Image (cartoon, rainbow, N blue to C red; front, side, top):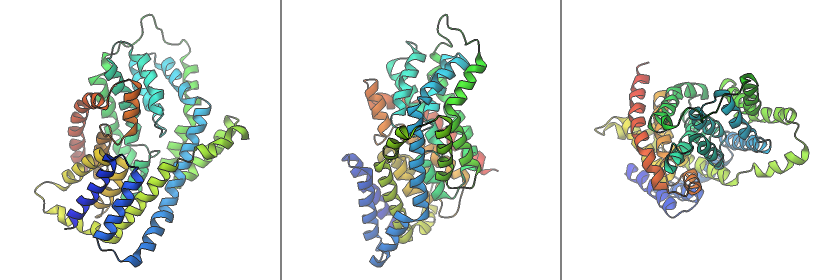
Length: 399
């Protein structure tokens, strides 16, 4: 019966997405349905709302989103990501590396608009060597690799918070899968691009180009390294980087003041608050502790069940919503790095073909193509990556 209730909750979220309703509304309806259907006592509602909306983990996460977005606004103001693209071109002198690495670097900051920065770069690097839809795939695919593992993204922060896995172990565990993504994109599409433009030569001063690249990306790199190494709340680390960046780039108050408001991404914050309330509803129901035993009776391994739920759920409702539902279920018995790597790899795959992923619609519109065309180019890559993800999962479980 509890499994049927969970399926009904999934259906509520899926229906909301299909009707193009905001994610927070779908999640709120799912939380209300769970509260009623699981028979949670009404007197528990106050505690659920307090822990979900004002609990320490929720506050830390919202502040992390805000400070990261603020840093992104500062980078945009100084055109640092565009400068990084120019420096990468000068350092490597390779159209192929530019088509892969620059969108990846641009994607290190969570922004829908990042794909619009990446697309013209890929167009210049690929020229006529790739078709329109192939360039669309390369722009979207490499821009989103960061979203599979970096703790600057909401779904990664949420997964780490809910699973109990540290950021550094997770990043190290995901590194082989990230390299696999780079390699697969290269084998399927990027290798068609000539290494250099005809008559193009590498810059005579590579050292100067490397220094320019570091000047463009130092704030992102320091923030990521400190997040991984220091046992501090993420927002405190990013806040320190913000202050340092203000001094290094000599921001004036007139430049900084509008960012306090523009960095306040209310939709993201509201989504996060409702998701955390939903998590508290699941915890209060007690279903999380009983589900592993229910899944144990199925004739397929539990990791396959969880991966399948992650994939289908992320395609329908998006990775963030599915992480909120699945991670507490999958880790009810305790933390497991191999399982988290498998689930987040699966979530990444699903996000690249999900109608709920707004970036895909944005890049399809830019190329005057369609989501169906993008999915068609993506599926062969994801099929191979799926096999690699399960092989890697079983290798990790041996250690």
